Length: 294
Image (tube, rainbow, N blue to C red; front, side, top):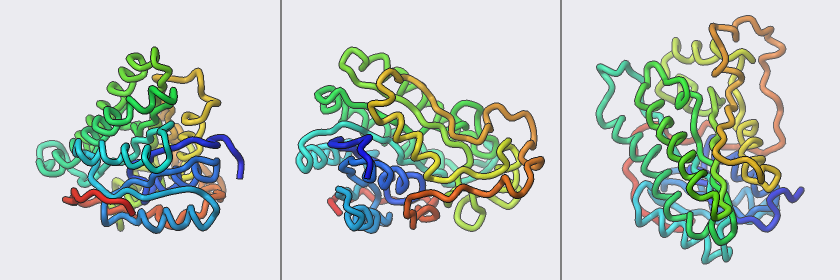
């Protein structure tokens, strides 16, 4: 075990599946105590057990942190258990539907506002007083869609655009307290969201997802977690208000360049993390507000 986050305490929202699982396991491997946050139906307990079995430190927190009371309670649990808070990772989010804007379901839009916007705001507000004490930092899940927009899911890009602007404002506002705030903007990642069998995409949209990637493939959750690790660590001490796109070149692409990549270069790298929940994480609308430790 290396020590890039030795003696750090990190909250990771949406930590039970997909990219969140990778972040939790990466941070724990690097020495952090991790609070794995998720809804009751997420495999939070499994991720915590896996971290503990590998010699790391972790506890679970089950609750809907888009609500003010749950967000405050989550932070209080972290500080009570580990004595402080150094890192807040706002990874929780939702991608419940795909449709043109004229047919986009109102309940799906409201669900994204709750999970992509409210959760980020509530957790940031609750964590800031503790991050000021430790001169800690925030890393939030943005998206290349927050930069360019997202056809077939325009509200999703809009919610991520909020995260980008909101956290840049936080970065400037909180700099005088020694608190940094940065954004990771994933492109298409190999999780439940980007497969037609497990997410809202149809076959055509799934194909177009990789066609627009110059590297010709989806990214892996671990590749995204590597960037979260850098930004959360002291190695990024002079980085704040930045957006790091982990998108295989989507934001600079001008066409279906992914089709030109030979098949041997489209293979995903073999990571070092034992990820079991990359395809977990229900993309459908869920109503779960009960908060508890796991």
